[in-house]
Amino acid sequence: VMKTATVARTKVGDHYDWKVCIVWRMKPYDEHFMSIENPNETMEPIGIDLGLKNLVALSDGTKIPNDNTYRKKEKVVSKLQKRMADIKNNDPDYERSHEYQSLKRRLSHGYKKWRNHRKDLYHKLTSEIVYNHGDIYAENLDILRMMRDSNSKTMKKLYKDAAWSKFMTKVEYKAECAGTSVFRVDPRNTSNLCSGCGHMVKKDLSVRIHECPHCNLKLDRDVNAAKNILSRGLGAARPGPT
Image (cartoon, rainbow, N blue to C red; front, side):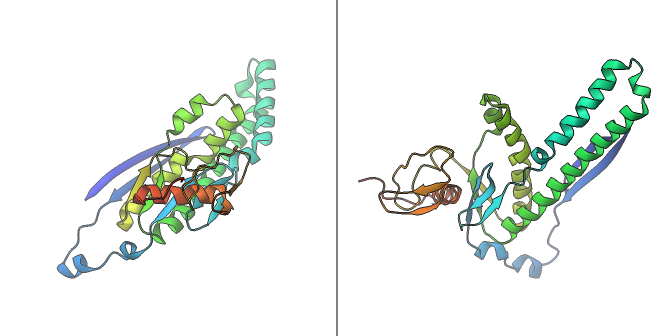
């Protein structure tokens, strides 16, 4: 049974690339197929924390750094755009300029290359997460609101470059194919709550290590958040401050 069909058009220089993605759900063809156990059902659930320094931190301690694909090339992009703007401002017939068209193609191909790099990276990472764990628990983030409310251009660029929504979209459709579920939890205080004892340990964004003065737990702040996300999703009762 066909579930979805997506048609994507991407402008590359003076032409377009077209891609069609069709997702099918296969029906089991006999009783033997239907009796096969889903291997993911026996795997441990995992909590994931999305971030900017670490793209993803897992509740098992795994950390995946953000490679900041676009940010690394920002100076190159800025230089190309500035040169194109100079040509456009000084040449009324700039569209016929060989240099302008060459720069335009170079920029378009650069964007395509960076998008493909991120797409390939996200496919590999999400496959590792989904096919090696059971149910997945993640924060219910309003990413568009976070970008809109931020007063920092740098932060907005970092949010855009991280592309959390694209990452989670891949996690969700792969989880569905694997027969597991993705649950969203309230993100409030997941970084400040101690995953060991339940006390609140306030810290600035610049502080990368969670150190609890109550139970002496010390670990990466993002891993601490991922553990809280998993516990919150599973509904685990924690002792709380006494």
